Structures are given as C-alpha cells and as structure tokens.
Image (cartoon, rainbow, N blue to C red):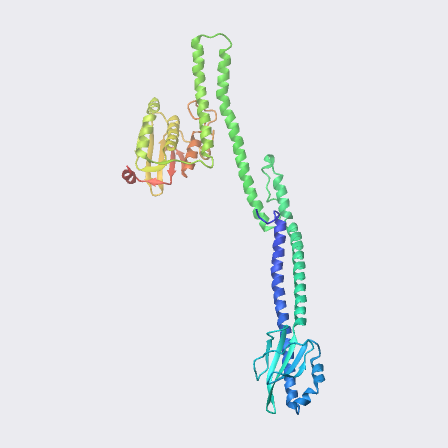
Amino acid sequence: MTLWPRSISLRLAALFALASCVVLGAIGIYLYQSLEREIAARDDAALVGRVDRMRALVDDSGSIAALRSRSQLYGNMLGNRDSVLWMIDAEGRPIIEINPDRLPLPVLAASDAIRVADAEQGQATRLAWVDVAQDGRRFRLVAGKMLAERNQILATYRTTLWIALALGAALSFSLGWLISERSLLPVRRLAGRAAAIDVRSLDSRLSAADTDLRELRGLSGALDQMLARLAGGFAQLSRFSEDLAHEMRTPLSNLMGHTQQTLRKVRSVAEYENLLASNQEEYERLARMIDSMLFLARSEHAGAGVARDTIDLAALAAQLVDYFEGMAEERGIVFAVHASGALQADRALVQRAMANLVANALRHGAPNSCVTIAGGVGALGAEISVHNMGEPIGPQHLPHLFERFYRCDPARGNGADSGGLGLAIVRSIMQLHSGQVEVTSGTDGTRFTLRFGTVHRAAEVGRQA
C-alpha cells in the first residue's frame, strides 16, 4: 500500500509543496542564523564597549571610592534592566555592582584583554570582562547582558518562520494542484479522443488533433502506431474469418450436396458406401484444416516454445525422399539431395515445415522434372532449401505466399493440400525458431529457403554421438 495519492494532480501538488518546504526552510534557516549572529555580534560589541568605557573611567578616576560614589552614572550608562555591571576586587568581592536581578557573581578566568563568553551558571547571560590595575590594586570589570530578551525575540522569529513555512507549503500545494489540473487538460482531451475510438473507427488518428505539446505529440504518435497495429490485426482477423468461412463452406457444401442427392431416393448399399467414402475425404480435409488452424493458433501463443534437438540435414532429406517417393513417381519427378551438416531445432516442427515445402514442390513442379533438397551450414547459420522447376510465381504473389489461405489462383483448389495453410505453418515454425523463410521464383524454378540462426556443424554432431 502506497501513501502517494492516486491522482497525478495531487502528486504534483504534493511535490510542489515538498519542494517549497525545502526551499523556504533553507531560506528560513539561513535568515534565522543570520539574525542570531547579527544580534549576538551587536550585543558583544555593546558589552565590549561598556567594559572599555568602564576601564577608561577607572583610569581617569582618582580613587575607587570616587567611582563607587557615581554608581547612578553606571546605571544610566547601562540603560535597561537586562544589563549587569560588576567591579570585583582581587578577593572576589564586588566593589561596584549594578545587578537588578541579583545574579550571582560569575567565576571568570583572569584576562588582561577584554574577553566575551556565556555565563556558566545562573540565567543565560553574555559576559565581557577584563582585569585592570590602579594604584597597585587589581580589579576585574565585568559587563553582562541577560539573554532572555534575545531568546524571546529569536523564539518569536522562529514561530513566524514556521507559520510562513506552513502557509508557503499550503499555498504551493494549492497553486501546484491548480497548475497540474490545468496542465493535464490536454492529456484528458487526448484520453477522451482515444476512448471514442472503437472497432468501426480504427482508422482515426490522434496525432491529427490540434496539440502543440511535445510530450503529447510523442504520446499521440505512439498511440497512433498502436492503433495502426490494431487496425492491421483486426483487418487480418477479418480476412482470416472470411477465408476460413470460404474454405470450410466448400467441403461442407460438398457433404450436404452429396448427402441430399443420395437421400432423394432409396439407394443400394454400395451407393451408400460410396457416399460415405466420398464424405470421408471431405471429413479428412476439414480435420487437416482444423489441425492446421490449431497449430497456428498455438504457435502464435506468447508461451509457445520449441524442444531443440540435433538434426542431421542429410538424414532429414533422406526421410523426406522416402516419404514422398510414391507421390513423386506418380508425376515422374525425381529427387536430388545435397545436404550435410546439422542444426539445433525442434525435429517434429522442422520435419513438418520441410514436408509442406516438398509437398508444395511436387504439387506445383513440372512433370518429369527434378526436385532438389539442399542443406548446409554456413557462417551465418544453417539453411535448407527445396527447389522445383515449373511455372514461375508472379512477383505480385511472392509477398503474400505465407499468408493464411492465400492462393495465387483462387479458382484452384486441391482436397489433398492443407487448405491454404501450409506455407503459413512454415513461416510460423521459422518464427518459433527465430529464423526466416524466403522464396524466389523465376524461369530457373522456384526455391523456398529456411534459414536458422543456431548452427551445429557435423563435426560437433559426431562428437555428441
């Protein structure tokens, strides 16, 4: 639990008040100490002056008795009841004493020069004294000033400073709150405009608003970027929903059409078996599509990870050739393998990505041609590529090949494929491995290349084995 208020305005106001307290407190301490030093210096100068005048009177007087007869002169010279004056003989007895409050005689160290110090006993008193000699006799002249009045003045001044500090803090808090409220008005307006944006107005932008504040320009720019990403994601989600509905409608329409056509009259057992067999193909197609969508959804989850294993590229290519050998023979396609080295990756995911690429190459490759599977480890990492000859892919299609349900020819469909999700799955697998997938296409054929950043050379694989 924090003691800070939940409001930015109140926090800023509190900070203003705190800063004002620090500044005013520092100024108040400086002024108080300056006043205290000034009063003390003035009192010390007055005491020294009195002692000096007393010493002059002693020097000018003919005898101590004459001085004692002029005690009223000393009282008038002191001028107030806070001052005291003593002339003390060598035995410590007062010869002359102006002491309205009956202060005890101070115990002072001998000094031929005028000294100033605080009294060590009794009331708080400032003393100045000096030892003088006349006619072979030594005396001590002591002038004092009780500090009660000075302390009272300083106490009153301290109280005034505290009151001024409290009023200054309160005033700073109020002004800080008003300034903060005023300064945060553009932020509130920006928040209001952001709150007004809904799914139907994702094309709205906050930076277009009339703000001349640099901080808000940065904030509105960041919010606009977020809105652009949200708009892109929403548009992609909308396209995905449309594509998904389109892709699922075809097999469902086939299933419904075949079933309705069959149920119009009584059929033989063989015809029903043919219907079920035909429906089975559509069911499998739907199942593959759902599996692919589930895979893509899971791979895009923030917590998705890969279980890395050492994969021998040559062995991986050989497995793919064995698996797709029958499909290749149907089209007169032969395989060429040029793979070596190894990489650290998720074996099942890499096999799935390569299977999608090889199936794609066999599906779109020219009959009686060659599909080449190549792999190797270079300075920047491992690469695996699948190349096939065939009709080039138009350059306008290349940036979109890895989008979900994207087809270069929308009129073409194939119940054996993954429903337009195969290349999207390949890209998701490479993103899980922090890798890349690239495609080039031209008259020399079409090549898909998977690039992995983490490499393990064959020699290292051999040592691990």
